[in-house]
Length: 393
Image 1: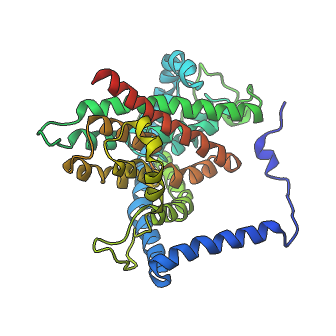
Image 2: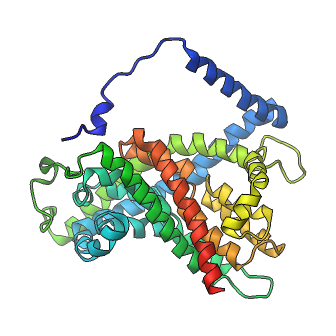
């Protein structure tokens, strides 16, 4: 049996108290914050940082926690009354060849599509859901869950935008969903290539002790009447959602704040005031420089379109908010809407949630590979949507 990755976390790794690593870190830290402070002003930079973190906590984290509680309650009911067991049996022939995951993972897809990325964590916290997975498959839940996060919201938003001719983008939004499916397959498969090297592929995610040694043809239920089982399953599932909500706070606040400050620009009048969500516009500037590469891949109608997927790295909600303006100004067509939908859905703010999600799953050391796999998956989603549009339109 190969060594469990979690076992490696018990080994203490030591380094010299002062090393080259220290100097490099201090140098990079100074360069980054000097660049931010010189453009925004030191006081404005600190105020924006605090205000953005506070806004994310109140508007984003609490919202995600509410979603996680509701999703956890739903997950508890689905497992208690055998829905997940039935779905696993019916859809395994489809999910296994496409994703290399058991059929039960489709429940995670549906849950995140209807809500947001972290919703899959409440499922993964349920041993009656984990029992269908091998241990090497469990980290990939972050990738497949993120690939469909906020899917319904993004699709409905894109479909509802009116084009300059008075029509809508329903077809383009649906094509974007197909692109997101392609991206999700790429992301999950790349992740599994890594985890197969680290885990025994025959080892179950749940030990026999956790599930009482029952087979996959059986399921554990609570004692009592149907009504009491319903209430207990719902409340216990919701309780796990609260834990999930607290677990994602550091990742969302720290990483998303930094991404926002690198992505967004100054206030409307071009000055910095220290308000939340201000930034130096560095990432869009980089994207504009490499637009000659990105444009053929995605078929963007204007260089400004790249701001949408770049913003989706930190927050899909903020990204889709840019789209109506681009459409109104003639900078986005059906092809662009399809690509926006695919990439916003597949990425859906993964830079701000992947760290917390992997930490919650207890695979923190695999966060880097999860992010790399999903970055490639999101790019493939955009390219796939563009190619499908070329075939159809």
